[in-house]
Image 1 (cartoon, helix red, strand yellow):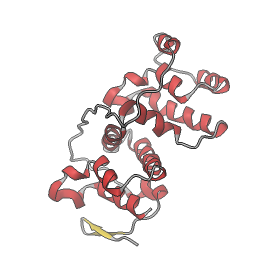
Image 2: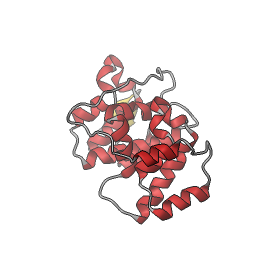
Image 3: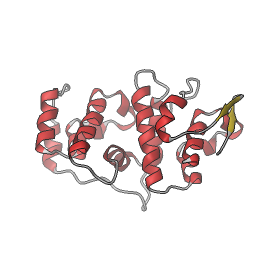
Length: 200
């Protein structure tokens, strides 16, 4: 069992599912997100038909539950609904978009009817943003009380995604932005997240 002391508190990492109970966002850090270009070994965007891009021009700023259920019944993919809701244009403000939480719920409901081997929410987001930028977006959203719950849930899913991909702990240390913290590593709430990942 791995033990660590962060800010004088003894930590005993548990399972990734306990992450939302253990991680508290740090509110005094900068809320910046670095942009990232995909490297040749990373996934590129999932092709979405031009029709979906065209339809997104006419999608209302409010999407009803009825419309989401209609898309669910017709089996629209997570990616096509992401585009229809114009979330592909959100850049770093994704968590502030009103449709984002509805999209996550839609993907969860879609996954319940069409089980897949990979977690579709993180898989779609990773395609648009890459691992490192997505991790930074989630970290920033955890510092905002209005997006903290959703961000913590998505971080839990992202960690599970990395576990399934067998990502090395050193890679995850970098993806969580912990290689740039210097002497403040142990005070960073993401360090607790990394310890939980390593313990798994």
